[in-house]
Length: 121
Image 1: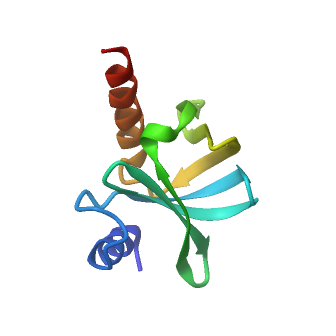
Image 2: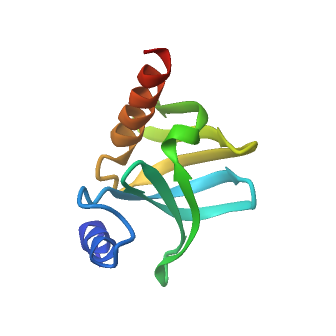
């Protein structure tokens, strides 16, 4: 299955929203370990799935309200290797090398920016 088909399946299963934003990435650091993960968005939540290359998307391991994320950094090393770093409930997340991204990084950045603007308003 290609990444668009995976996103469509996750949407039909109600695991991500109608934007069908999904990516596979390497979690260098999660509160409970590290490894390959799938990232999706459902409303204003970042949904993190277990991911295995042989079997595909597994169970949801984190469902994180973006409004509760602290110290968010989204960017790219050398303009190529994307990364997402943040803290949630005291746990540190370091996610790198997004593959087959369907625009999830920009959506996360915009959702967090909107949250910050509400705080200062």
